[in-house]
Length: 108
Length: 124
Image (cartoon, rainbow over all chains, first blue to last red; front, side, top):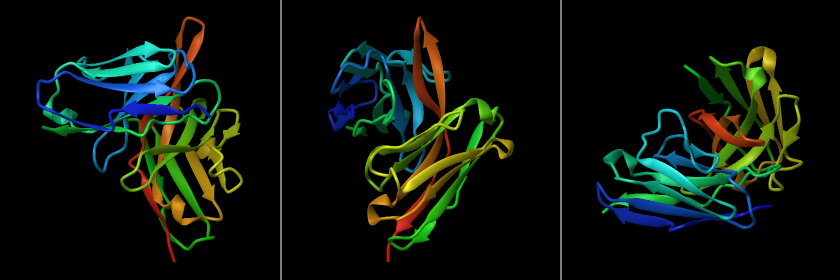
């Protein structure tokens, strides 16, 4: 199975900061990488699919990049509503489609 | 509004069974793949099953042989039959819709609509 590893596991940042989260796959997954945001007690919400495509309704301060094994989620200017946990997910080839372990973004 | 609503969670003893349901609304249910994803308290997301539009099913090794995913398109419903339940199956179970975007000659897959989840607790 393809494994995905996120870093860091958590980070502290201030409103207005630029935040970068990385996801590394255990083998090349081309651009088959999605990003989700999850707030406490809520379901995950799709932010980015196919590594860099912004889901409808998601603010443009969120962006994704990368291909192959290394991917990045960037929040250009952190807003109060962005404090949450972020997960990457690979959907390369056939299942299982694994998630990263998550990155918790906390208020500094 | 496109919506998924899970039900059927509860407390079950180890070794017992439970059947989860997911009711879909405001989209053509039969045209989409569907999935179950779970999350233990304080832990990350774990994909636990998927079913295609043709009824093809997929499972990770952790639940294969114990869980069965199915769908009833006429009732816009998704199901997860869980047998031989273990303490490690305790989690919130979400149903999610799978969708595809075509870019060039590649088909990119993602889960774009999620329910609020139903809680399964396996304990004696």
